[in-house]
Image (cartoon, protein in one colour):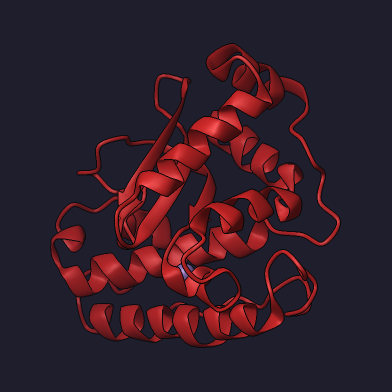
Length: 203
Ligand code: MN
């Protein structure tokens, strides 16, 4: 049984970059619905006692669209909220910073490439920075609530940074201007959380 996690900050904490009304609806309605729906979908099945990561890595479970979409939605949003902050560390440090620079040349060119993946996702989905099993970093994008943990996605690995590009994540404030929402995201992204995910995945 999964539970909607509370936010570590108030709904208006990320203003003006992400507005309070969007946060309230996004967390309280959208994410809450994924939690309710995944609980319903797994109830009484062999998957009922799995941790969320185990569920997402289970190819049989991922063949059921109700489990796939709602387990993905719960995991993705839990990750998303954790990495946002009103007082973010504005750039990566240490080993992650070095790996980003050696992979993408610079933090700025990483951001450009990531934004391109987020912009070119047609319809609803996510953009990711993924730590692959071979220890390299890759940028990817997935449709719907898919994510890099799922067995059948194009770029597989540990998601260490994720951006929600569903219209529900930005439409109230940015309408059709997804590019402005992506640019604003960097202002509230806390790299300490990305580093923590990176370190955990590398361990
Ligand atoms: Mn969302």
